[in-house]
Amino acid sequence: MRARFCSRCRVVGVLMMALVWGLASLPLQAQTRITYKSALVGTAYYQMGSELAVAMRVGSEGGVVLTVEESQGSVQNIQEVMTREGRYVFTAPPALVADAIAGEGSFAGHDHARFSSVRGLFPVPPLTMHFVMAGDKGTTTMDALKGKHILIGRGTFSAGEAARYFQLFGLEGSVRLADASITNGPEALREGRIDAFVTASSFPTPNVIETASLVPITLVSFTEEQVAQTGAVRQEIPGGTYPGIAHPVVTTSLPVMAYATEQMDADTAYQLTKTFWEQRAALAEQSAWWDSVTPDLLAHMSTPLHPGAQRYYDEAGTVLPEHAH
Image (cartoon, rainbow, N blue to C red; front, top):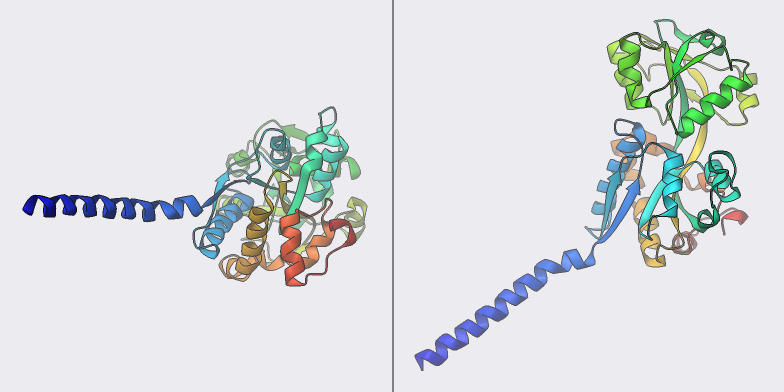
């Protein structure tokens, strides 16, 4: 009798252990793990990615896990569409995605058929151009960059925009470009190895704050005519955003979106989009740059939405631009 009792105890014990292990494995089975290709460590967009990863995990009760990967910038993010699988999300300006699909600009000569599978999810805070010089003048004009040694980075969207602006405003050939990563900007400016650097990020951006904490800085402020020449959106950085910059700075900004590809399943795209919008207010309480994100920014989407994202917007009653369907 005792032997049978012990035998039953062993059976019950085994069953209980199996149940415990089974329950413990359920969260892992229910998790959707996604790679989120962001930007360089230390930039605002990398910090945004980290904030978004926390918000997604909280909002989905652990169901969505974003792994934030460092990137050299939007060009690399789009190029990796060629090799990534379905659970890949990246950020980029819509204009750059349009270039990739058309095989133009940085993507000329590439086999760009895979780029046509890119689909939109939701907006993130826009890129704001920062032209940062050494000095304590507060603000200055583009002409002050003539003859200067300037770091614009390599392979990033901001590097391309900076080069375009130099050409547009007659500075091409009169500035000397430093061959280094933009992450070296604050240290190089502090040590006097460069006169200025250019970065594109939402404000207040960490690398500009870091620079202003090390040395006095001056920011380039555009005229209204220059803003119009760029074809970009006028952006004003309020005075007091950065140490030593008391007056508003007029510059430009460009919309940025989070994208996936057709290889992502509709349920995952739906869950990502739904969780983002449900967490947007909480994100804005944590960091002010999320305040600028509204459904109106979807008007800048240059590709159709992912069907899963479209399902969320339909349920939410969001009015979408015709080209996003």
